[in-house]
Image (cartoon, rainbow, N blue to C red; front, top):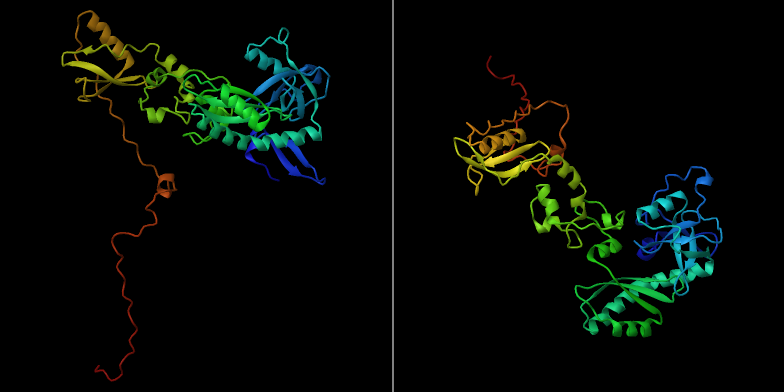
Length: 387
């Protein structure tokens, strides 16, 4: 069983059966943005809807109307209406969950005109479909060379052929407006197809290409994110994260989408926190805010605003109390007592920790050589020795 990157990006695999023709089947693990049908075992009366969700290459999905009443299930390869001609896609979702997806995307299933499903894909359709898939990478490389010769400030990141091999979508990235009218003419003459140019952003490109993030998992934009929400540095500030652009940026050179995942928790946790710009007046000195431990509800203050001299942890309730006293013109006797952490007692667990087992020097020889013990040799008794 063999498959290449182009077919796996479509969510299909190819295997050789008893017949000489290859067999195509849907691969859930290869499919990006896969939707789990958690109502699959419910009665069929709840799943009789004529609108289905169809997945194409990578992150492109669309909804079609099953006007012919075909019996379709998830993973079926079908031919659908396109402009012009027809396209080949894979059924990714059917039944009641499709209506939930439409509601999520604010699409009215009654007033919206959906394109139709023609039929299940025939062997001729799948053969032409595979041929077009194999041409996508070569077409992208040639298109990049043509765009470079025309000195266009753009990057062609991906190419997607239509199922009938009569049209191709060229996805590109550009910082400024690009006049690609001459490029379309050359591409149409070179590949004998209809050309559609579609501009995408850096996040969309990362989602289409895929990869592994700094967390060790596959990129969220290529697995489950469908709508990209703007991420700002304010999200990092609210979470007390260092504003290091190298650590905050993802593979798309934009701020990581995961900065928004826990933002609501941090916003709720610090609702009653006082403003950090307010200094605390005490009889000893004036203290300024340095950092905050949000979930432990501790704010750290220092007597010097430019250094961490006399840094003191203060509970949030005590900070609010001192600010209220300062507003009345009263200076607090002292800010707060230093919080001393109790030393952790070493408990004998009966096994070595992971850090000890994974130490890089655990196989090194000791610096001090071991003393060799001399063996006492057995001496034969001498009979002639004086008694």
